[in-house]
Image (cartoon, rainbow, N blue to C red; front, side, top):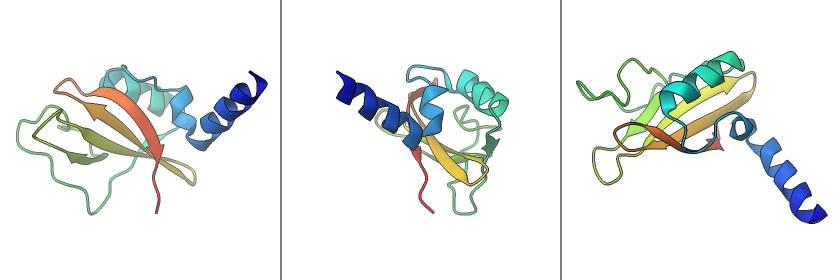
Length: 104
């Protein structure tokens, strides 16, 4: 049990936003949590463009990519200091499925 707890603690250090943004959270709420925790939306020059009237990414300059097929996944980039993460979502309501560190 201690080993599991130690591995869990290490995984939380690897991606700090996991502690702040739980899977199942609507992205609009997750966005507010991230901003309050000092994260800033990260606009990437090579990001996809938001399609007209796509409410998943409209007004969200941190959108990296949103798919129009399947489960409609999206990725949104954030920065806090030297750390960069992506928040991953699914569906037309952009429900958070997880976070991952961005590799530069």
